[in-house]
Image (cartoon, rainbow, N blue to C red; front, top):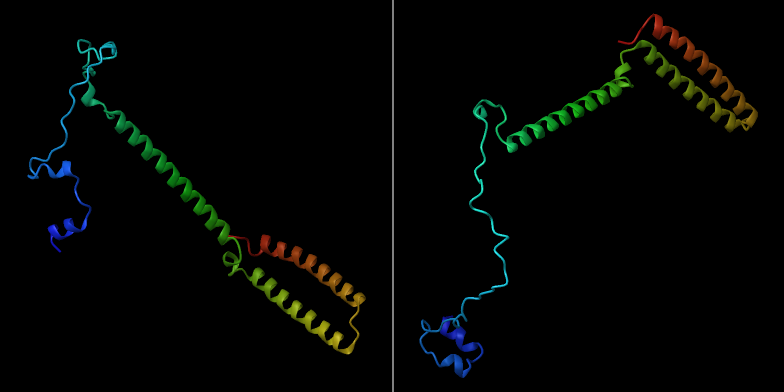
Length: 172
């Protein structure tokens, strides 16, 4: 589609627009002139006769920090370094706390023995309770006695394990 075809489809020009047939002569309307406002004062203008050149000290080139931008950059770098150090400390603390749990004690024989005992006692109590229930002999009295026995066994196991950990297998 040519420009002439596209222009023919658009709205028709008014007679004033058509009066100038040459597109080069069709220009914007002339400007009315320069606006003069005598009410403004020249008091707000900058004094060009005043000292506008800043002087620097003679040892300027010997200073480590020469500009305010450079000082701000150094300060910003120091803050970022401090943040990185704090994050590394937090990560180290989290790693230390993580290693003191199950994974950190996986080579400790006391920990392994306690895990095995807890598994065997839990399985034995569960199987015994199931057999008693199947026979119809499971009562709250039997459940209470079993829970008390588990509590006494747990307390004894705690103190024995604590003694072993302090005397035979101290933490690293």
